[in-house]
Length: 189
Image 1 (cartoon, rainbow, N blue to C red):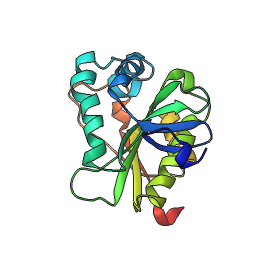
Image 2 (cartoon, helix red, strand yellow; image 1 turned 90 degrees about the vertical axis):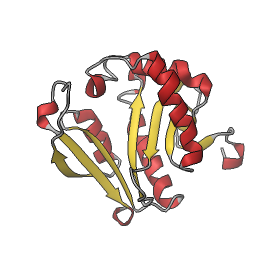
Image 3 (cartoon, rainbow, N blue to C red; image 1 turned 60 degrees about the vertical axis):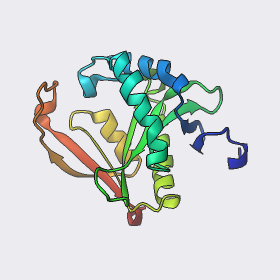
Image 4 (cartoon, one colour; image 1 turned 180 degrees about the horizontal axis):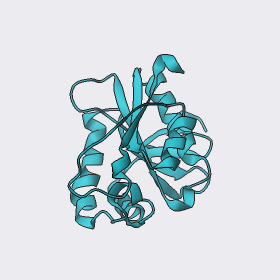
């Protein structure tokens, strides 16, 4: 499929994924995704994101972000074969004025785990960040104990930069091992 053939709102496509803009109609997908305790394990200790937070805060912020930071933001990941919602990928702008880097993120339904989709989507977004946006750095953070996510980052070409510790009001199991930061630089490709 050429870019001209891609549905409106499509950011990019990989072999098996289409990353497209979220719409208000995606609220139920976000609710389902964030309701899975395993998906949320390293984020909220398995607690779902409340519907009012998704409906009144998160989804409106995602939608507004497309205009605020063109080319960056959170993108719905759907199967290219059947259009099934699989989760999301993100290139989030950093806090402040540095427009030369972005934070990579992803969250996939459990049914999409173990199939290489997180790596495939991450690699596609990294290529996009460097080739289309001209960014110099893509980085990501996760809990040190989140081994699966760390492996995705490594397979996508990012390298471990540091381990650091944050203070949390309500720490979840594994917090004592810290957070890890990974990065890939445009020159490192």
